[in-house]
Length: 322
Ligand code: SF4
Image (cartoon, rainbow, N blue to C red; front, top):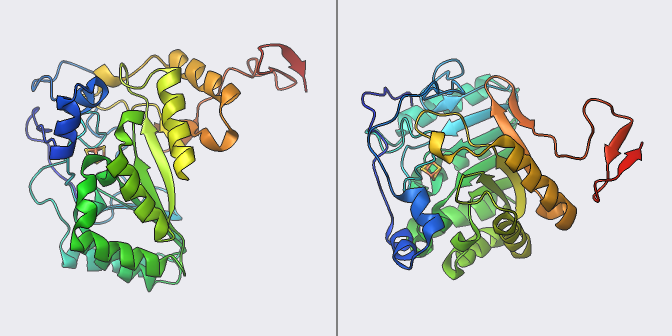
């Protein structure tokens, strides 16, 4: 689904009624994520697609095959709201937003030809925003024995939790429920701030869990939004208590247009070090930076002293010999 970037004001503002309500209630952390502050991008050395998803690694429309055993499948370019820090802001909301059945069939053929692919990650956009297409896709993938695991990324429970009642979503849930008894399905929930875990959002998440899918979370470090120990402690603990495993916290990608969201890396390391000392191990996501061609590289916390692996710091900062 390669999309050409024609202008610099491509990620327009789209805010769902649910997110709009949270903003109107004075939720600054939400407003900063969704309100588009300026249309004109400032000069920057950052690229629009630094991870080369649409060029080096795309064998067919919607597919990114970077690592031999995994396939990223962007089924649409649509979301219920547009996050202004989106890594794929170069293409979210552009025309031609949904893969056709023909495109999906081509991708399925690719999977049959590439038996080394065991893990398919369905993303977008938001696959829950096109429930019929996602349902069709996971039914097709279910028939392929070489694919052992399906992952589905979504932010719909945060953006528009009321859509849980839609019959297409309920139907998708039923299929997830059916397939997950044979093949593990992981639902990757994108969540940035504890105030996103509203009563309705929690209800949606619980419904996903009831399907038998394993729910994991993904978060991006965002300057002035969640770059704070207490905020992230509240988020990760809230997820843990819901039975959602915090999986990754990403350093914000160096994407053109995202400069204002990027925190100093040492601040992020310090925050994650403090959290590691206080939260349960299960409630701590792996802190990573996505590097083009290399994957998600874990960022070290402040426990180890340089490259000397014979000594490190304990939780109180005291030197210990290993
Ligand atoms: S939901 Fe995901 S894909 Fe959609 S705008 Fe937000 S970060 Fe981007």
